[in-house]
Length: 250
Image (cartoon, rainbow, N blue to C red; front, side, top):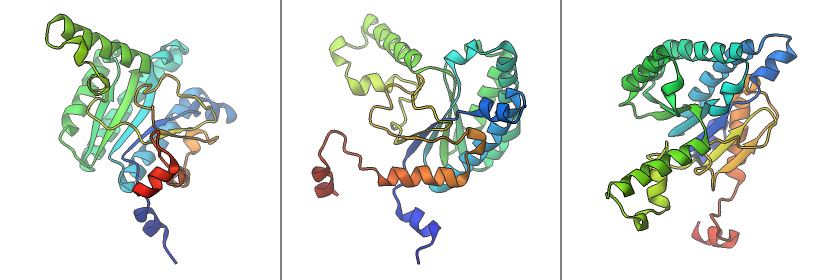
């Protein structure tokens, strides 16, 4: 009989997993607790997820922590989330550093407090040379913002005479996105029952496998994570080719 660990080692591991960690507020509401309680429980699940995917051999993990649209939430909830970011960075940076996990933030950080910006810079600096896994935290991030930002950078280079408009192709454009030095995600996971991308990695998700589940993020267990990887391994990634072409090539 093949053990679970043996079967996982024989399976294809996605090189890049991205997750929308949805359902913290609804999880808390079901328990008649404030939304902030759900977010704190969600951090515990996030920590377990980082451990799980690092052990599984995933090289890049991108987590949608705070979207550019989340500023529209009640001020009390936004303030609580900002404080939770600070606490989490203080609590987990050293631990992740010991695991050789690199922490990197993507998004427009200028709207964060100076203290939070310093914490972010410190975490990135302390873990910058680590090679076990890259943990991308998308905070004040939006896919549309990412596309516009890349377009502006390229337009400035054209204006400066550094490149010609004809030089701009898909590869060059992608290199100017927030994750321009990372492979595109292989597997996208969204918990909480919603089935949309919510302005997350719009360019990079072009050929990503999507996995949606009803489980709210604080309840998303290692068994659920393993189920997502198992479903990924049941998919045939064709990139525009036929299934027969893929089978012959394989």
